[in-house]
Length: 243
Image (cartoon, rainbow, N blue to C red):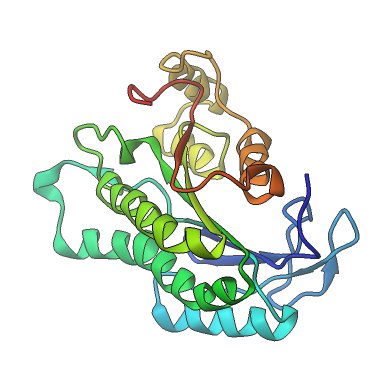
């Protein structure tokens, strides 16, 4: 896959973590302000902060710009799946989910947008989940926040297209991740049994692997995906009831 120059790639990940990297294939930096080398020899810089806080997003952006000088690719991927019955959904719980997932993406994208437009090249991926298209009962606040993220993706894709800034969403189904490990522990079941039970609802009959999700991300941000913008792609083994 072709990437122009040596792009600066920012990943907005986890509940309160930033990982910044110059290559999607580079390994994660273990230091808050590191200079480690990735597997392909490229420099990796890590910046920590709480993405639900506007001040932390701005600080992290400033530190990344100081370290690398530019940002070409952004992956907004923050927050776990917070769900519950509607009648128990408080304003505070919903606002926290919005700050962590939606506003974090809005704030970072707003910061990188001018430089992407100026260079006439940029890639933004908003990582959502399949509930954004097909929400189920008791799926709030996550499904509400993720649906808003899908609308944001479409708005940005229209505004970015004239400047060659491409914006897409990836809607995750069940992918191997630490949040499922923790959920299995809370439920008091073996991880193997936890995964097997959820695989029954997936047409492919298995849980997705992280690299399968990453493969699509790499395609979208490469020049191979240069005619794709404004899409919301399900990465779910066929689980979503809608396309």
